[in-house]
Length: 342
Ligand code: NAI
Image (cartoon, rainbow, N blue to C red; front, top):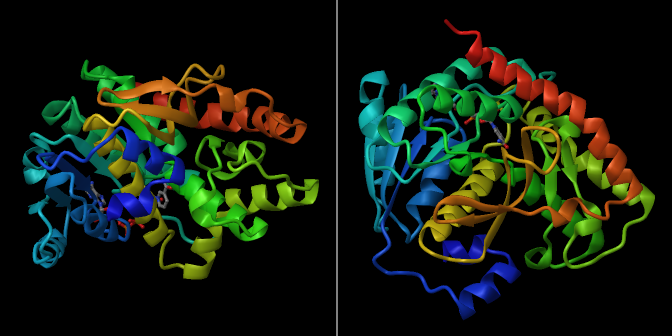
């Protein structure tokens, strides 16, 4: 049922013809930061997945109650809880997918980069443990600023000698989820049909929805392009302001992250037709990391889809060039953070 609700129409039709859920499938997923605003609803959604045999919940506090609560749901996966640094290593042993939403969220007036000082250290420490305990796992980074925390994770993994660029993902699914929702609303389309690729990065102007590549094919006036692009780029801030100090997107983020986890598990399970947008190491542009559609397979990124960047509109081409300096600086800031450490 969960798969049904996350999969696009295109994904579903291919599942019918080629991919059949393996009833023996049993993957282990860890959430680091599981007691937080994103972690809790994300844990609930993953608990509903038929592909998961065990869900490991790790946080520095408050994880026991979350685990006790979730463990009463009569779905197949077993819930295990891990609290504090001394239990971090055990939370990661034997895990296939690690999802990291640990860290502080934005308050009104903050940019994602304002979170750097706190979250950079958290991500660095957690990824060091991932490198030591489950270096072969898919790693999904949610903690912001994603444009910097993914390069931080890559550097840490390199230092540990276990970096596999095909298995490190910045979670930008929420940008796609938002783009699909807003475009469907604006154009009166059925939500299930709409798919908008979002490329670049995950902050402000680095978020670039490619509206001209919307499926099904739909035409937008210049005003609509401008309005939709700005709304998609600022959607996170819309939520931050509405929550007025109580945090940033958690429920829609959990939904988006669960979709990305489910896609990763389907890819691990042999589904040969899984595509998602993600912020990954990339040769699509001159930047070392870039979000685009990728094809997922059992070894991670199987292919980076370059066709979305061909035949852009003038507006998209300009926006692409305009985002590069900011994205480049955020990537370099992340790399420098790890390389400067003694
Ligand atoms: P939250 O404050 O509600 O939860 C964060 C959790 O992380 C807390 O339970 C906290 O105890 C835990 N934590 C802190 N340090 C930790 C450590 N060293 N190890 C393990 N856990 C630790 O925050 P929320 O709303 O869940 O957001 C989490 C992160 O996700 C933020 O950085 C936020 O900016 C980011 N985010 C990313 C989005 C994306 O699209 N990629 C969208 C929305 C939020």
